[in-house]
Image (cartoon, rainbow, N blue to C red; front, side):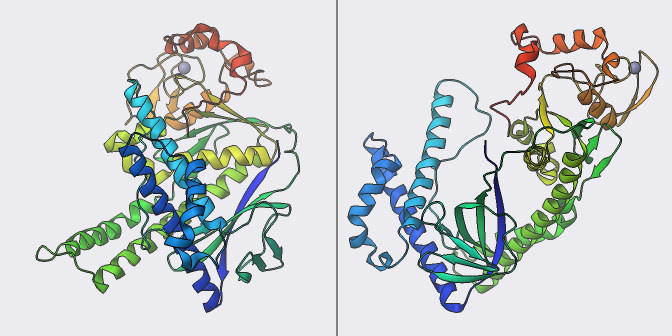
Length: 424
Ligand SMILES: [Zn+2]
């Protein structure tokens, strides 16, 4: 396995380059929408048109329907059609599951037409190693040398480059393969990490990562803007273009961008610290998509960006040589007492602390859950010096909680790297 890393860098294009970016984004969007139209027409006559059918078809018609794009990079349209094909596949798979009576983890909608207002972006490379970086300059096919605000953080082979626009600024997103193998797992403590709503993450060593609550604090402003947009949409039964509404959209984009930035900075700092200090990290397997269906919790969960946190934690464990383990999703990490294994069946979501009925300890909900994860019975080898804390009673409770799945799932070989296919 080679490691892929990505780095998103703001660009400083000249007016001519900015115009070329816009043309490429427009060309890609045109091809995407054309392919979606073809795909829909195919469905109407009972034909499934995949990207392998659509791409040669596009190449035959493009000079007729989009002659203005022939001077531009043709890869932008190629990847736009591949994107559409993947979106259609995702939707088709979701429909098949629903038709088979299964309940998929997340809902996948039918691909939608792209609008200039909403998406501006394109694939800028011509394949692996076709984009070069020279100090703070990136050399893009058909566009040339574009200034960047910072250096590309990683050395190696540049596999993909996507250029897109957020809030008026153009960015290049690099995917780099450094050709190095991930470092071997280092010696270090096993750290259980409980992700939650109140505190972003609680570690079994007592460290806590507070939630920036970026969305909650900006929520009032966001809601105000949302209401103003809704009001401006329908004036006397007409929905005309208005500069005022465009300004509101821009304001909303800025608010969202700020929220994302604050949250990401917080996540990066915390996950780096955990992955650097641990030899092994144990997390619970969250059903984030399922939780978001619960509307009362939805905003808080979306705010905390729990799945984003876990994604970063997982790849950083790879970078810094820590083993990343997902505990079984039926493991009752919150309800078990980490000291004696007693199970609190009456625990509710609002209980932040609880008294153990077995040993009388006052347990902090999050810390207790993190400590249970640290001692998760499914680990391939016990935590040195702490193995004795896993009582037979606890194992029995765990086995009971997982009833419904086959008992052999508890064989250590299966548990060593439990990657659930339905998790984020
Ligand atoms: Zn206890």
